[in-house]
Length: 56
Image (cartoon, rainbow, N blue to C red; front, side, top):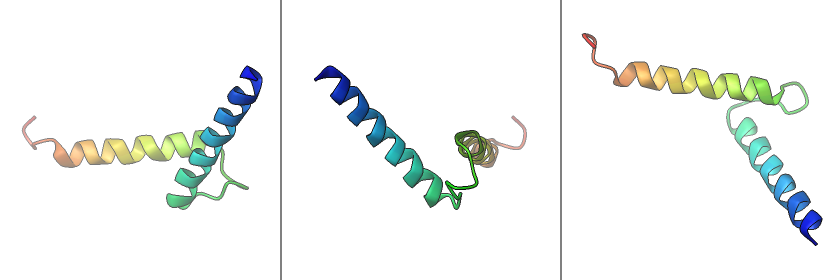
């Protein structure tokens, strides 16, 4: 039963990753998880720079 729960959790996690990728305009057939990670990092850095005061 524990294996079933691990597989179920992995599938749910994969589904969430696919939803996130799609919401960012990535095509799961062409883009990898690395592409998703790179885009998330880019977005986070861009938001960080927007919040940073110019003289910081």
